[in-house]
Length: 359
Image (cartoon, rainbow, N blue to C red; front, side):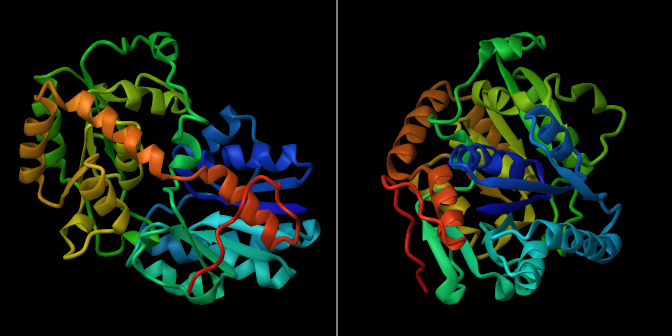
């Protein structure tokens, strides 16, 4: 089997990293193409994943369509030479458009509901895979599974926290510290949405600095007064940093989910949380497992942080809830690997089953 994977975000690198290993172990060929991102390319390099960069990042939403078109045309030229059996991506805009042109099956993974980009992606994809409780339906090609994207790399079968890795960069895991993530709102699915204001970011830092060390990861350029809080560790150690942190907050959905799945007390602050019905992943993490708090209101977010991060019982209760979640969820890496094989017409491993498509 020949599989093409496209990468647009650092979380995509983590999602497919073990899938790539699994497919290559089974004897399949994997080709990776990427768009430049603040961390995606460095992560691919750090993990030794061969790849080709096809497009740079857009500097604004107005440039998005132009960059996307160039990316899709270059991807089409490259994959025509490869003649893949299956193409896959998270979000999958380019993959869903290019795969039919080269006779490949497209498998797109989606976990963010209500975004405009799905209208130009999912109708063209052969298979759309989502977490089981995902609210939207995509017809006969819709596959649901009991998991979260982030479990493909944060499940204990694949992730073991490394305290010595942090100490090598001057971070003592036993000392009190907090991780913040601020993102740039310039993706297609960000139209009309937003996160923390600069004033809110400054207040968040000031609040948490009184409790411990503060580390910031940000795709949005930081002002001079916040630049000294930038992460002390490389991207490959971000999940170690999150695991041992006393709390996480910010306006990134992905890192909020990662922190929650690692059992770190998490407060997510972004406009998506203002909807009458928030995205099902966040509802499940908050209401079923108690691993996250979400709000669109900066003031409410600060109150939640004060309530959670100062309670001495919070860390232990979060770790217990994390264990309960893992008991309920599947091996997402195995699921993804088997689904790609099945769509390519290759028999997956005998001891694993792929969920049947459900309308």
